[in-house]
Image 1 (cartoon, rainbow, N blue to C red):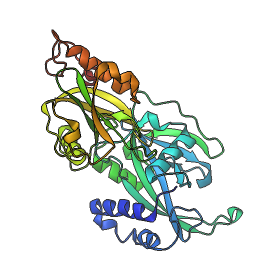
Image 2 (image 1 turned 30 degrees about the vertical axis):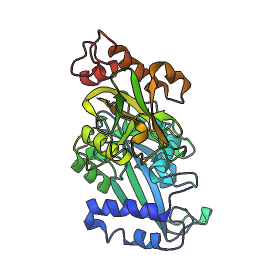
Image 3 (image 1 turned 180 degrees about the vertical axis):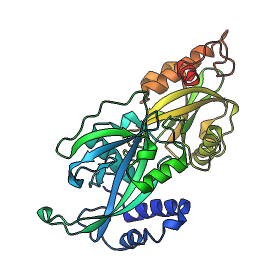
Length: 352
């Protein structure tokens, strides 16, 4: 189901909080969101919402593709929203996958913008008698995405709509409004950690796991056991602050001891994006049945030999086993500060 007018309005109001001088320019969009129409439908006139993906490589260059429908203009991948697009960001991801062959898993969010659009561009579209479309207006939501890997993936163009592709330096970005905002934001194309989770243990070989709600398309890892934690917000001053905020929202009475960075892992978001996660290790020895759980189904202690019986991601299972192996009698504690054999993911992160 495509995003509702209410959800789009929240995105617009948050955007205007950062760019208050653009309220007049977006007055038509706000008026459309107040009407009893589907603002994302291409049949909605005199204007409707579209989405674009501003894909940036490790050199800070932005992917442009040559659209046949625009007479060969070099633009960011983008287009109309489809009924199956759950969010505006999901629409942008689908467009870049269709037009340039870049899958969501090859992309990640930026720390500066997270899931917010960097620009909402308003532009006029000429009439297209062949399609029965009058002259109208596009309100284009533009999302910046970094490449998750070091090297750009192979571009596979959708030849019926796209005739070429090029990576352009930011000062050469073809859209003036997008170019100005990219340069002002100081984006460099190098991914940063945007999520934090807690590997909670009791110091005696048990690990606390959280059973998530089974809400596919809404909850990250629906119906699975997972670590507590979540994504960074614009107000979080650090990843530890992200984790502590998430814990206060999910399990407000949980207080961890010896909380330290342990490893860096890669996860997948509900939209299929790559998510670099800072995992913190912390100790707690309480009874989870006595905690007030505000999100999810339950919390339980599990020993390492019980993990194979759970619906649990392989990455989380391996993470727990590595920690348990290093925390066994005679070994170091396994945290980043004192382990004599740092976690491979943490080591590779520091070496970049």
